[in-house]
Amino acid sequence: MKNIFFSICVLFMVLGCKDAVATADSKIVLSKVEAAPEMVTENTMDLEMPPEPKATETQIIRTSNLRFETNDLNESYQNIQKAIVKHKGTLQNDASGKDYASAFRNLTVRVPNTNFIAFLDEISKGVNHFDLKEISSQDVTEQYIDLESRMNSKKTLEKRYLQLLQKANKVSEIIEIEAKLAQIREEIEAKEGQFRYLKNQISMSTVTIEMYTNDASQSGATASFGSKIWNEIKSGFNSLSGFILGLISIWPFLIITILIFIFIKRKFKKKTP
Image (cartoon, rainbow, N blue to C red; front, top):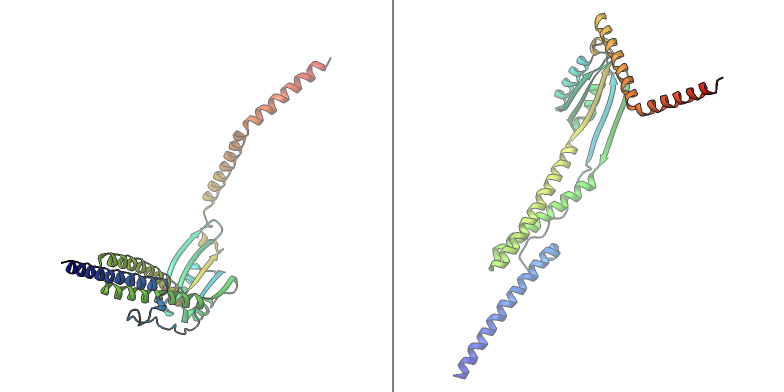
């Protein structure tokens, strides 16, 4: 009887040790995947290795800022519109306005990188002088490769955790792996968003155009004589209002000055025989 009882105890002890060893092995694999995914080989888990980084061509972000005077805003705008269509660009922003002396129109155009120079040459035709003509090129190749590499590494890590999830047989392991997967998926989506934005900036160049005219007929300066008189009356009234408001703002000093003047004047009157 004692021998049977002893055998049962030994059996339970062996099974318990096996479970403990299995759990420890699972935790070791998880820690290896998390700490150094590139070190996990076929000896630990049958998982694919991360792909070798691919050689990529130079990645350039091109931008340009232009400012010039034109005799006809509408004609210049129509020419730019034609150039946008011709070179497969898009008009991203269009702002216009006028004051007493001039009128302006500011445009932001996105054009494919391959058509950048041709588009600039097209819209420069007929411009006698540029107040500003700035063309810049930013090399983002290193940033592009780094971001792509990080994104691919996260995707490889996600695949490994998915394989671990298929082999997990304990609720605690499944919960731990799913939590890691959710975190990795969030990081992947963030990297993908950054990568898409960077690729868009590379593929589509940005051209900012500021054009203006001092032509009175376009700025609205050719007002009637009566309108000009009314504008001058309003201007004079505004100046008078400003003067009065200025006096009101310094009224304590005015009162003190008047009191000092009255005091001095009375003193002089008393001394006069």
